[in-house]
Length: 346
Image (cartoon, rainbow, N blue to C red):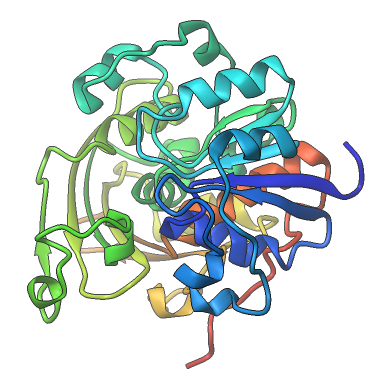
């Protein structure tokens, strides 16, 4: 591709779409040529998000305007809306990166069971690549249809990959508790995310019934080479952004604490994954606004278990940042381009 590529964002008025704009205006290799919205066509994005006033005042257009003008299209839409746009991009040989759920699941039956929809473009799904960057970059670079992972799965899969890669787990079942800020629910207001309801509250939801379960099990099973099951419980934190996943691992009898830390050395050359020093605890405060995934490891000697704590910003590494990371790989840019942002120090 040319050195400065034309990018567009379908669904720029949503949280993840606006986050894409925030990051891409600082990307030296791209130009945002079009942004769209279903509800705010004709209005400047800066009217919705004053943070962009005087910096990026582009007017929101139609979805088809984005596809016409851009070479790389990011789509930040609810599930069920992206197949038709991905199909158009496929025919025009354009890159399509879906931040929604339409291209994450390999099996249509899982999509039917968990999302209640069918695949209308069945052949298109044979071209999809799951965009967990650190695991799949070798196939991402040759793809033009990326299913960007969900935010919960990103934190969990990155947290568990070294365990499964080294096969230090005793069982193929994991208990996982994850906590997310309210932006994970999207921009549309609901009873659960209404301020008086969620403020000064902390509670689990969709226990054993969250739509990210098949995605998590699908990708963990690929890592292990056999079927993995999870008991996954998400919780809603009364904060804007961030995810903390706490993962419980039964270790093989002969696995030592040193073996655990050696397994996680697989991340030594990964810029965006920081395995913390022994004794430190991953804290979402220090990944906020960044594309980092911080992982801390805690060996429970009494029970011979490993507790993995994995923290990300759900809007960046869990959405827009990882999508840009995938674009960088496809376009041959440095993977960190536009993403070298650290959390505020306090």
